[in-house]
Image (cartoon, rainbow, N blue to C red; front, side):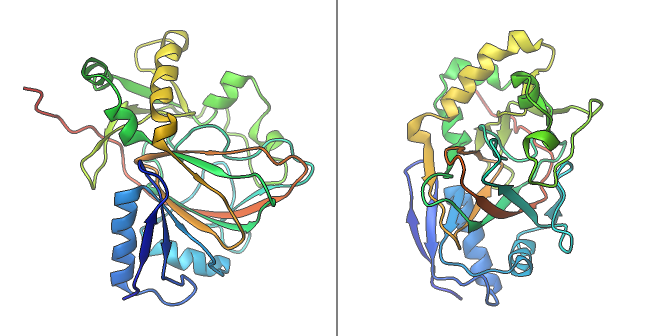
Length: 287
């Protein structure tokens, strides 16, 4: 069993992990340590990894079944591995805006593994925010209200709100395709219970269009307030990438936001996601 060294990045979430080489065979006990650390910290960062796409995929498969993005294709020879690419001529980046992966599906991705291949010397960091801390930051009255609400989520929610270009036009260097106007909506509890830790989190992000039974206009002020609670500075950690860095995060607890602050520079990453389950809310004894 590897002797992992785990150093927290910030008080709310995030940790750097040393002591394991993912290119080598990893035993079950070490995988168990990594899973436990992920549940505790929400985001794990492993530096100085030297991985081929197949090795990254072999590692992620130890965490669970692979999830396929419905609108972005993978590598031609390994469809499980999505290449996230922003070239020197691209102006928009994939993953911008606070979101949790595939919230627009009935069963969103459980975890995401992102591996850095090419990154700018400065810029291109990823911010992470703790949805558990966001829920706990609410007043008792707002927690009670939030527990009664359900959200309506759509993959093109951010695009519709910004009246922007299609995915295929905005991410021209990637194998992205438009979602289509008839894509079904996914309805989730606003307060989601983490299925492994039992913690309640404020499950809201870029893909959230409105609350069930309300209009988008009626929903927007409260959605903005709730998102602001999650992304307070004290709830955030920041990951600075360098080639060979690998991050693993829990989409059931964490929002993330890829910063687009490197114009004219190239950034290339390989992403694999783990399949998840349908969000639910556990009843609490409020008496």
